[in-house]
Amino acid sequence: MQTPLAFLNDAKRITVFAGHYGSGKTNAAINYALALRDFHDQVMIADLDIVNPYFRTKDGAKVLEKKGIRLISSPFANSNVDTPALPPDTYAILDNKEAYGVLDVGGDDRGALALGRYVPSLLKEQNYEMLLVINRFRPLTQNAEDTEEIVREIEQAAGLSFTGIVHNSNLGYETTAADVLHSIPYAEDVSKRLQLPIRMTTVSEHLCGELTNQIENLLPMTIYVQQSWEHGV
Amino acid sequence: MSEKVLVKGNEALAKAAIAAGCRHYFGYPITPQTEVAAYMSREMPKVDGVFLQAESEIAAINMVIGVASTGKRVMTSSSSPGISLKSEGLSYLAGCDLPALVVNVQRGGPGLGSIQPSQADYFHATRGAGHGDFHMIVLAPNSVQEMYSLTFKGFELADKYRMTAMLLADGTMGQMMEPVSLDVGEVTKVEKPWALTGTKGARKPNIVNSLFLVADELEKYNFERYKKYEIVEQNETLYEEYRMEDAEYVIAAFGVASRVSKNAIDEARAKGIKVGMIRPITLWPFPKAPFAKAAETAKAFVSVELSMGQMIEDVQLATKCKRPVLLCNRVGGMIPTTNDVLAAIDKAVEVGGAE
Image (tube, rainbow over all chains, first blue to last red; front, side, top):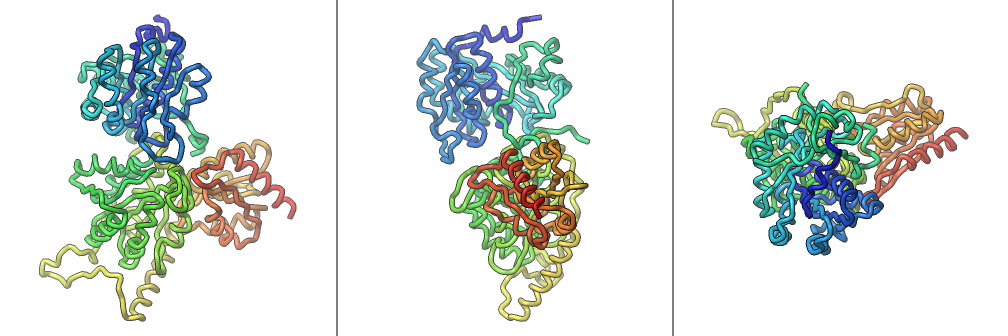
């Protein structure tokens, strides 16, 4: 068995998380940044989500701070100002070549538009990875064909192509190990169709024990963007 | 049963509308319900439907009136400030006895307010949606599953009674993601002989109108409409009871407030306090009967709301003020916490137990 998370040794300097909105980008990005911190001294994460004012990386701010990860987010995030503002210090990630950076991009093509202004820097440095977060249980990305449609829109808006996949199929708090296992053929279909490798599979921490010998490059997820009313249905 | 999907509340209601046979959506974007329009703009063309971003909320509701006149299923959606703009149209829909579905994903108010969740449009939805005497059927979901099922039901009820059905959600319901089963019943085919479909020279023209200058004629329509409302009250009231079997203290809560309350009830029960909940699912018609019954034995009531206390008036009316009714509330976009509700339960024990 491989050392868990060993794949993070080969992380590119900058990792971009993008995908269909609601695919789980923010939670994946936060958990990835936290895991990355165990391998590298300087880790920063930037919240570039200009689309969704309700759930943003800033919600996980305390956890990140505690682990010494710098969070770069819009001064208006989680305030009542409904302004699609990008954090001005995102360039700190691009300019500080010693640091490992995570960019959490908003959903769909509209969210990806915000990435555009950083693309010249990313292309110049080349040391980046742009990851597509996918969830088979989202209604508009239930098969490879539909997923590709959204992928092409995102790539066009961002002006950057994906280099890998984060498989994050889940049904929220109802997710079982079987749900994840049954979604593997979907992830493989997407991988084949888009000619992109599956870089990691993200699963809720409590399912990791069951899945660790069955799936490569597993990243355990703790949900940091969660509210008090999530249960009690 | 089909496999579940993970969806946002706003997407769920949009999906349900399409499943219910709605092929006409008119709207204008506003947080926190913009995903409805985003979803419709992508999906309506795939089912030969119409998505139209109107130039304003007022334009959108008037387009709804137009399509409703033809007997087609039609909807618009907005959030609190936008719903205020639609008020005139809501009155006209009622005056014309037209079926339509209107969604309000509430945010903090008054004025432009905040973009965070609120329930402060309860009075608007149940009492003052516009000028004149009228009611809408008001449905209050408390999960993404109900965002789906109650939207579907709203279309059915609207057609059945030629009324406007309003889905009264809040920002959390619109934004939260939960697993949902997309199974729904069959769409009921309702004959609409009143609809403006073209006479083809074969029948007398239909007229859809809310202007009646002869006073006793207008009076007659009002009386008839309120007879219909009585039938709706008798047949369509929906509510859910939680741990009410032996409840001495009763929480009244709907939407997101009911979810927080459920957690608080479980904690209070663990401490030995006999507390339960009546969750109105239709806010109009309000479930008066279970509250009246509870007032016979309960010691006190607590209304948990994201408003300055609006539903509390219906609880007081339904219980005829037999027992004290306390208010537990947060406003402006804040949500009561489990501890807020527990503190209110303690207060109810103090007030109710003393009498």
